[in-house]
Image (tube, rainbow, N blue to C red; front, side, top):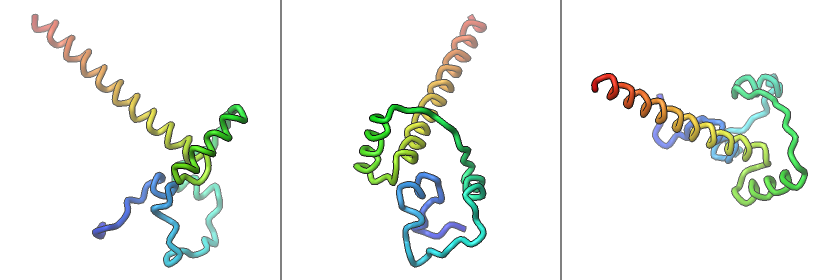
Length: 106
């Protein structure tokens, strides 16, 4: 059961520091490996080549936005892109379905 005022346990809330930064609740994770943490967060390592100046700019943008590092920023940017594209695809398919139904009725 979710308590009032409890922060939603999302990857974004971990990355932006809403979760995980309160020393009162911090303890050393003895048996959690990096691979296990990735599995728990459903993360998969990928490799991408970016221009060095772009990486520096991304680090700057992340810092200005209070994000620790450029990789969480890139995840956030990619998630926004995916969300937007999925909505556009759904709207397009819905529009095409509606147009086809109207043609059938005519």
